[in-house]
Image 1 (tube, one colour):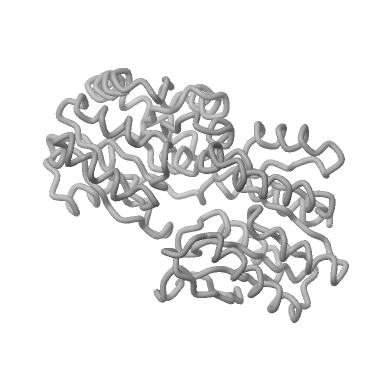
Image 2: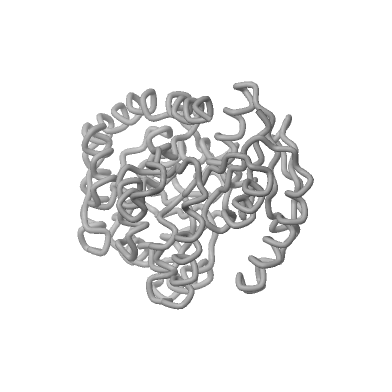
Length: 372
């Protein structure tokens, strides 16, 4: 089967698309990807997949970039003899729906998040209305819906009762055994006496990072390391300076997923404290949660149903209110000072990594495609 995937993303850092594409290739399918390129650096590790890239300037407004991308996708999808069109997120569903209808082929809507409930849209009613109406218009044309958590699947099923029932395919990493690393410590020249508290992921507005940085004052002798990038990066760095935390809070630019595991394994505790600034965050199961598990890290997570369910079921950590700065600081100190409990949570994470991995989760994706 020839599968055409379309994504407004950076393939060097989009682990979900990579996992899905290569699982389908290993199952004998042919994959073509149409995607954006945010810079001119080569994309490595995508052998046996045909990739078409549109160079874009991320400094431009998305109001200009999306129409540019859609016109480019329309033009190139005309010539693709695909058997299935797979749209990664709502921002690619329009050209995929057009191509699927033109060639009378199946259409898959892979909703990586609850798009219309993102925190970035909550206080922007006009833009939110645009995306809501677009999704409402296109969803009847979809043959299968995929999303990342049971709560988001339930919400989509309620919102669109006449659409196909959503299939949950979680953001689980490929299985990698835990190997203790010194990568963060050596890269930032951090003392061995200082435990490393880690956040990895996007630097997004109002997703809880300000609270975590302020809480770092109370982390005792531990340091806080953030790996990633995003629209509020400079604001976060300014906050660190303002709070006098330059010797306490450190930044590492985002890391290609092929290298991320060694960074994760070099930390001592992972934070997955997403704020409830939109239903997409509240119902999310972030990549980082399972990447921490794969890296053997104890975790402090948000006390939201999906995150709490995984943490409680696996025994890898604890949950709390992500807006409570004092509680975050206290819990970090409590976990790090209790070596016996820390070791038990580490072992629980290693055990859970043998269950929460892409090798098991990919069966759901392959079954969905076999049904097409």
